Image (tube, rainbow over all chains, first blue to last red; front, side, top):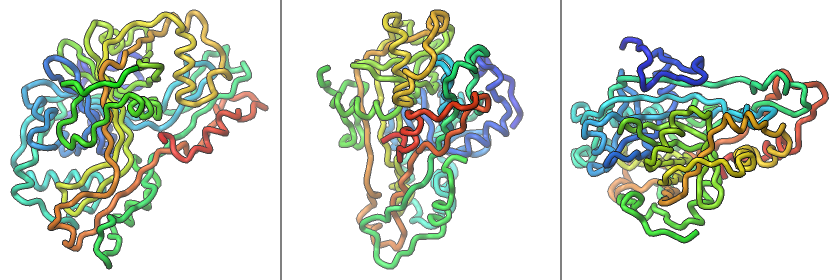
Length: 220
Length: 220
């Protein structure tokens, strides 16, 4: 892992102070979530679909059904564009023009490769990325399940993070115009647990679920 | 507005029961959020960027700086792909293969057109979509601000919503394997208000902010 210079694809042109190119900072942001939006093309046209991801080393991993159109399209040699966005706040300025949002986002570019090695371990990493500690508690994947799953790796060839935080920035002449301005902070949290209606009697809630529910924010 | 048949682009092939093609249902989902991921191409390569949107009638609107690369790329005649995803829950099954998420998502395809008419009113609609009732309380846009803003309209030519809700679905043989399963419900909410540090003295919190903070969920 070496740090990177901004490329033509990743250079932030407007509000260039918001661009982050250090891999440690980008990886730290990527590791806060598990949901991305995958950009790819079909017949030259853009498509976007939400998907789970996990970062391991210098790559993102995606998986799905063997016939998944998106995963198979990504394996044709095209460059994937993966976007992850965490919405942190609504920035309410004194005029519409300066309204904004506080956010943390990452964009990754890379070319997908199919993965067969260590498939079970990597699929377990998806589960642990979503709910830490869960993978060792569930029934292991069967060879049929592994064979029915297409796993791809996207090396993080180019990446950029963008972050906005803090109060609204208004024009100097607007600060005394008598209008209320501020930030509404947003939070996404684990609100409740619904055990499966078909859960066997006498199965207690496991420790990894108890721990998960103590988080005050899902994406911190 | 007429209802649509699934197209080659929008037909849901796997879990086809999750696909929704009725415009009223799709619009109702779109109106719950204001944040989308915009898929477009630059030199034939996929790009994805988060952006605010508002739906008015049978179109989505996006806006940004006059030189915004994404908005200008969309005006070259290509078909945009707009994705909106609300993450509702983590579906924790008895095996990794059946883990899933509960979500509501919409994908829209359409070709962008530049908008000059009623620009101020449409930009106000973005503000009201994010915080209802705010637009009439802020300083009106100046002609310079309107001229510096590129507003585009994407007719909702093709669209599909996908929704998953409910408990995990495991293999019949897994229900008595002694493993805890269930759903963790997620929620995104407005957690706190931070008035601008440069707020003039004696400006009370407006009613539209008070009302906004009483919501128990941002995307319901």
